[in-house]
Image 1 (cartoon, rainbow, N blue to C red):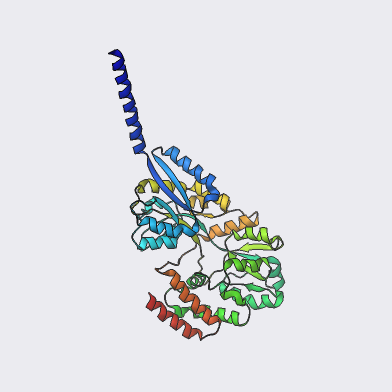
Image 2: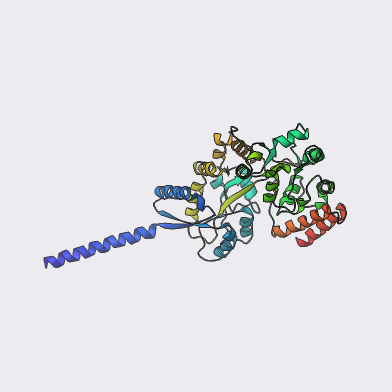
Length: 400
């Protein structure tokens, strides 16, 4: 009888322990978290995840890294299900599309008070915030000091108008082109027009179209300006065929590795502006699907991942620009001792002036195509600029 009693006690104890374990496991919330091609920084990602889980033992982070090429397709499929990821890394254009479809959770602006306010404002859709910024880039102007000195020009150009005005002299004195504007690649021309304050009435784009047509027809910019990509333009810079190249600070690494002799002659300055005076930038952000099961925990983890300390650590590994205001104040973004640090510091300071920012619209790719076709027609002299812009205006109104 005594043995039976002992046996029953042991069974009851085991059941109690089992029940406690089940309750403990049930209380742990698993937050599924997607990033875009961050596998090279797995050590950093897991370090942040472990630190967060240590502070929040009731949350477990399940990290899945998605290839860039599959990000939009997989996200679109996932957010329509009843079990989407809790937190997804996307670009703002696609995030805006999901917001239009009503598939994203709105973010309380008080939660993102630590972030650069201009970036937060740029991420809004219909004056509501649906995403949290992670990291940014802002193009700088990379230029060949030797060729620039050879041109006989003293002052570096700061605007498209100034750059256009010196293109003839550069060509005459160096045999190189001033630059190769990839004006029919994606939204390049749209961004240039935005710097001129042109967003709706495209007849106002006449000075810009006239300028590029004149440069193209006189062979002061390469014929490839209407066909080349940014990467191909970089190759022209590395071959010493163009003086100025505008792109992210990360392109300096490519120049250093692939054209060391050109790198030795390279310097950097601010990106080329229009009369409005703002800078272009790109940003990667996070969104929380409306149907996510752990929204509160997803937001909390996201704010931990994007806090000043963690953003700064990522920036030092990747040379991206932080979006957290506290991180942007760090001396890391005020260092001009090397070419790379100078580029990074210039790029970071440009984030303070990014408005008025171009707002993406529904079917933005089709809008880009209409504008790119118009500028190509102008450069090839297929019609007068006035007629081309009138047609563009009508096509845009019909399209929208």
